[in-house]
Length: 306
Ligand SMILES: Nc1ncnc2c1ncn2[C@@H]1O[C@H](COP(=O)(O)OP(=O)(O)OP(=O)(O)O)[C@@H](O)[C@H]1O
Ligand SMILES: [Mg+2]
Image 1 (cartoon, helix red, strand yellow):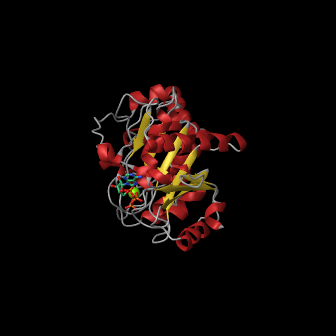
Image 2: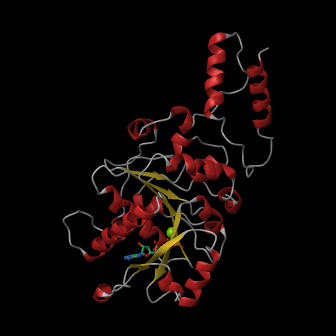
Image 3: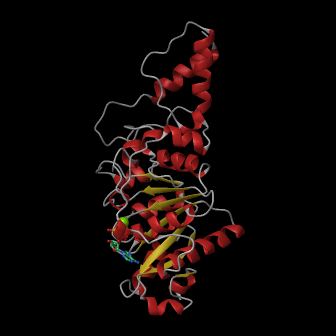
């Protein structure tokens, strides 16, 4: 028996999930080099490993986006018009224009320090996190040859699938529990360059799942595939999911509801996110008349702290 084979057997035995309840976080998927070695061994020896073949993973496939598009799920989306800003690069609709400004500012910020994975959160529920995440992602893919992945990481009250008219599972929670592979949770539902991972089936331990190394390594792999990854999350004050997930992302945007979020609450939310890179604040729900103000839609985080 070769050393490589022994090493493989050891890795496999270490990675066999312990039989347990549904909420167990499974170990990392078998790494790329390990799968490659297994294939080599199958080809060169009579060794046939027992048990099911390893689930496919993005690293084992090393796909470009076109290849990913072929392998991922392709449900028909039925976009919900109430959650969408009307986009067309020629339109001068105020709201669409504000998303284009937000997009431009993010591009400018990333000239200084590269980032791709953006977490969107707010202090409390209902301040427009999902609305901002979805429409920012759409503003990005309206640009020529830009690809964005939208992830619904609000495992407690997921809503993006409703706005997109997309299946809610399999999704992030299913992958994190080991019940689905990476390709089956990524949807490409329209001709646009927008991809989507829904939240998946309800779970009782969302914070634990989102803080797991499995989440971290999935996000690291996704980060290399897309121009932008926009992650919609739960509000930061009632639950710790967003604060736990934020360090896994490159930066955080805090949505503040105009006339709704007090400056105290916004400041406390910033405190909760202090371990992460807070890029700025989106002031959502501003009346059209107020949009002339430089503070109206997007500002550096200091504007909230001050
Ligand atoms: N700027 C806006 N213009 C029009 N409608 C908006 C705007 N912002 C939010 N909404 C609407 O308000 C509702 C709540 O917004 P949304 O679901 O995005 O909030 P949320 O912060 O994600 O809530 P939750 O904390 O429950 O996830 C939705 O119906 C959304 O379409
Ligand atoms: Mg939401």
